[in-house]
Length: 503
Image 1 (cartoon, rainbow, N blue to C red):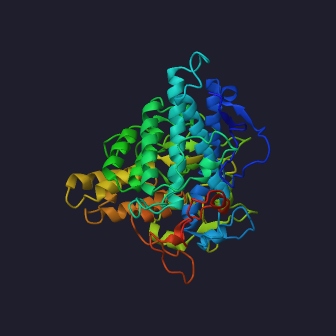
Image 2 (image 1 turned 180 degrees about the horizontal axis):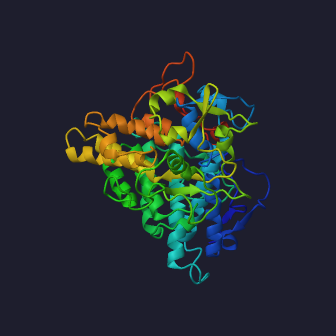
Image 3 (image 1 turned 30 degrees about the vertical axis):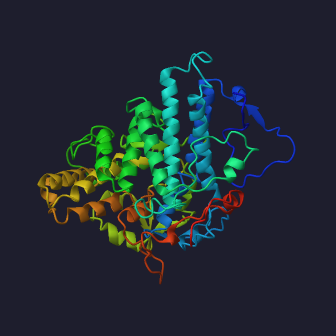
């Protein structure tokens, strides 16, 4: 199979204005020269992980965008950063606030994942060539590649496409769907002919990949593999996908695979709580809620509630961009502060550690402490999110179903129990079936604040996106074109069949 393949596989970016080269091509090697061993595939996979764990992707801006576009953060200081026009983004000036690097990194991860899957499907690497390429390793590598591809597509389709269910079947409503690698960088006719897929098609591919990843990646909750996908991580992200689609039945199935099916208990990935049982004091509550955001590197002593995270080590921190947005020190002001709209919506109890321990107030401004370490792992999904999803699904049925009401209350209690000192569920909480859904939604605001959930959740609920601290600005409808990212100009120029998002 003497096809040409890109020479620098781990860092190549094909999609930011490909140009046909003049003269002979000296930048390519044959696939047989590049892809021979299990290690070659793992190196490609590492490149895919590195792309999504970049500051400009899911370890940073993909978590920041949904907060800046929504209503729970405010601009604290403006710094002139041409590559990060966050003030333009805050102003919802999408035509000017292009993040081309984010687009490129997403498709770099997809390209690397596609190459790995292509090599496995076409038997470019075999046990005969490499004895280490066991069935176990083959399945693991393919499963992780499908996980990364699905993760990149899901994050990107939510930025460049409308909420699932609005215009999901419309032509050019999603993003470019690439499930095969671009083999020859100098032969870009195939790229020129590409158009945007529908939102529906992108979601179907995401679901297909995550289901395959669940099956292919070895089972188990191995904390020593922090930063690598597990079958639990695939199920958890699939639950997030279904929940975003308002497909609550399938979401519940995946949630229960990860944390167990008994409300108020967590079979795997238990919430960080010390002591494990009994009442807690204010210092313990603060330590509990800080734990998921207070770790770095790998190992088995990390937060048990983190299902999948990106790992920071001294030589390679992943939290640079997000910490610059939120980290306040004696000499550095962060780009973002907390809006009054957030504090009004969260309605924290006086002793709730998610306010006392995770928010600091200086003068009239408040700041998040979730990213206030110079070196920190970035959680991508925690069991707390799955508990909230399950509680909301049950709360929707609480009026008609007493068991659903009890289940929602039980899950609400387990979240509050580790965050509120001296919390006694039997006497502290009395929520009737008619109001439980509102309480769960408030709990989501408190628990998932500044983790990239806000805009996506408002759109899922088809709720208006409020102005926050923007003076004189009207709310935006959940399906407003003004919330759609613009596809980078270079991509439009190089691929004329790709249609730009409307204003």
